[in-house]
Length: 348
Ligand SMILES: [Zn+2]
Ligand SMILES: [Zn+2]
Image (cartoon, rainbow, N blue to C red; front, side, top):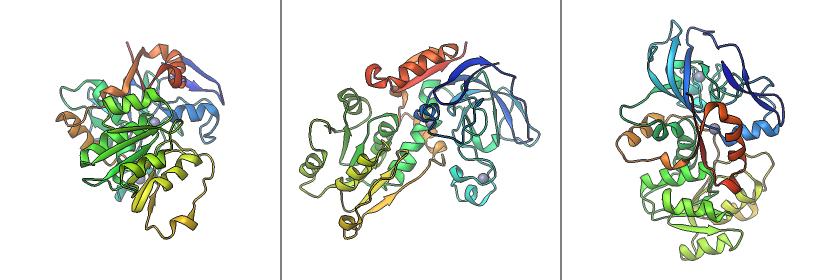
């Protein structure tokens, strides 16, 4: 088969590799039909994720058809079309039993395209298939469902649910990339009074407003976002501030945007320490949450998409054949120029 293989920082190749085989009775092998690229894949390629070994097939988001299942797999059968979750879950360890699948202790968690070969390939072995694959709902297109592999549950669980968004809240989302936009789209489910999108790219802010449910856009390269949010809230601050960038400045900005009693939900992947201004925050009853996605919400999100309550298809901005994946990486990595959100890669 062909696969996108990581060869150390800065190096990747679409190349031929042996077909994956069942290794454990809980595995399934899936023929990948639609896949996408994640910002995390770019982090790996920069060398930011040393736990990802050279020779690894990248990718943790896909839709495909099951071709083979191990003896212990009961929920899916060869021929089933499935959504592959970015999180694999043994379903039995302490964390899995608490629904914290991202922290699975028995070899699950975020392993695809990281610790085991991933989904940017013609075939992928999916460990713990019963808990890591979801049958595709009838009548939905791949583009409606694909982004439930990762960014939708990430924005929803780590941003909206951890941030405890409630009806009437003012929700400020710092960062209008795919995950920030996913937080805006799913925050709408809770009836906030205002969603404020904060980013330095006008093109992303425009998308946030026109397609992802933001009410107000603030370009923090041009205006002071704290002033803007204070003005919108009569000087109180945001009820919830979602950090969806992953750099110290944006985390610190969130702690300045939030009102006393409010919540800061960190979603961004951080590579450097940020300053926590406890000398200002200690008196403000602020809750700060962190998290890796668990994908406990995937069934709920699938139902909302199937019922027409949630439409993630605007994330698809560029389409490629699977064997054009190197071009897709280039367009995705150059998002500032290409206005890319998510690439849709389809096998022929
Ligand atoms: Zn991802
Ligand atoms: Zn587990």
